[in-house]
Image 1: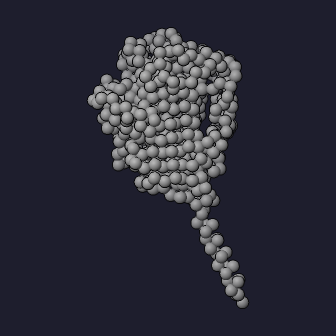
Image 2: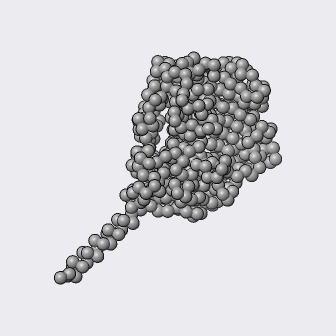
Image 3: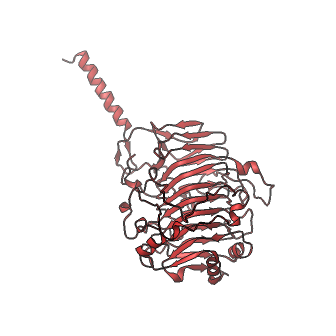
Length: 477
């Protein structure tokens, strides 16, 4: 006989079972993920706070429109949905306040199950602002309907200090994993896309991993940043376009031998515009203390021919790179057009100074495009920079100051440590940094760069420790 007490117990058990089933999540490939129920983020978000006691799912294109603020607590995990190509867009006038901590970073990652996550699972994070750009009201790639960014070019407007100084919020101790995807033909998002972002925006301690296109890409804007990690990207690590004039200090890129785009993958790819037209403001962004680690650990060649340059300078760019070190890429420095040579050799807007590059194949250290002589590139580089002759070897990297274990070589992506040690305590790059170049004293650069003694991204302290993750494929959240 079913008593009232037994009946109540049975109903309770059935309800509990149904609740537990509703909390489970099924991945797009049919695998079961027993994580807690996800709060869906869709459409246009109003001002709100995402809390660490819940998990969130970005479905389709999700916007934070003008006047709205998305706040994210430390330790919060947000998934991008693969099926709908989930993408988070901070629109012009909107803000994101994602302030993680070293012990509780904020994580944007794939909604696929542990072990099944892959590059390009979702669309990534796009931050758009009103700061200066050398194109007229451009639309960011990959978003439909169009999302525009940037103020009018400097050659058609007077300087707008308010726009250039505006804030799109804060990204601090943030990881973005498996993001960046071709949403429509020839329209890709990146792990972190910045369009016309103002210098009032704070970006520090950001790791991008397993991106489906570029890592950090700037389309115009004036924003600064420091402590950036680009890990296992598909295309370029640091990509600048459209007149970006900000500053970045302390950044590291590590490349995996099997991940490279048919368009040609570089540590730096720097442009001024989508063509070689003389449009201003020029791309004059300045980088210092960057460590670029390509996939070549020993020898002179690599099986994937899509890897190209440590630094690729194109179409009137005038980017400056100082106090940095590069190794492991098959090709060195290239200037693609005569307009690039003019920006560096004649006008002096672009600066490459106090850098070191180890070129595994000496014949490929300096390259040039149409109308440019490779010897001009070589002569310019060797005036104020150093080159270490290859082939690459453990001994050469150790002498340089780069731990050979940081280079993939023949290892698989799953054989890389989840918390590698990047600290540099000896070798050539442990000393020799200089901050006396006039570039550091330019308007909006004075006081931005920390004076350190080492070249590259690291001294005796490893700032990636505790908050970064170098094996996110198998990380359980």
